[in-house]
Image 1 (cartoon, rainbow, N blue to C red):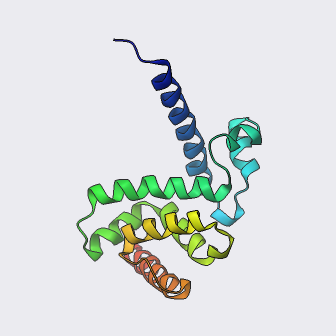
Image 2: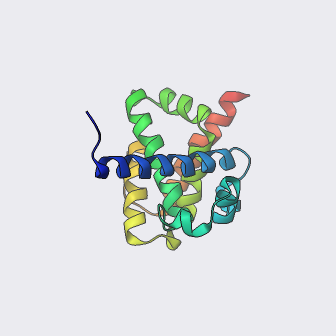
Length: 151
């Protein structure tokens, strides 16, 4: 059975998003999120910035989609125990870095992006409201515990 043209285009769009997210993941291995520019992402793929904007309208949008996909994986593997959370963060420093990045930079987010971040944060921590400072303390405590767990 052959795919419809619409299905093929949707699959192609999803493949291109995955490529952009993969390039972002590679950059997050060596840079903090605040150091990454859109040109870093597009340059690593040798594509134009305009091409990236067809799929993501900002650096924050690509970071949020990256986090959302990581959160989807997290919901499948975690058991809501602190040790599972610690283990997940031990294996996913990029998630730690992005949660800290967004917790400290919420003023730059659009209302839609803030809602997306709050939903993602809720998946990891069960926290949706409250001042960013409280969430920074929570996230930093997990990161600190994760770091101490490695020592």
